[in-house]
Image (tube, rainbow, N blue to C red):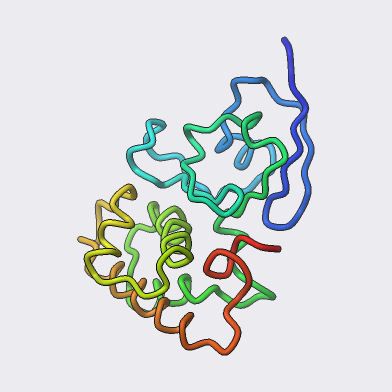
Length: 171
């Protein structure tokens, strides 16, 4: 069996591994690196549960090969908190009850961070369009939208917003 060497920086820590060329990024994150916050939902890129940031851009890790991420900076849900403090999006999801079963939540929060990095003051419609690739079967999205609005306001008001893509990409 042939393997390829990959080197990725995940949540600020460099990792190297020899992987099968067909290994998906989501499996590298979960099975090799033990970062199980990135969920596997549909394996077809429809649900968004596996959303991570790759070089600051939103990506569904179930459709990206680990070898394609070689050399990349990757941020998962685990990398969003800083110094033991929840990222404003994580706190807002808690405050606004933007989760129920929690399965979609990591991907939804990471996607929302990318959305806010692109548009720090989105309208409700822009939020709904921005998260449309991430499915939630429990909440009906009302509280998710409220959570993103809360976090957006907090990030805009912060004297110094966390570095990077709404506080997560740069490390």
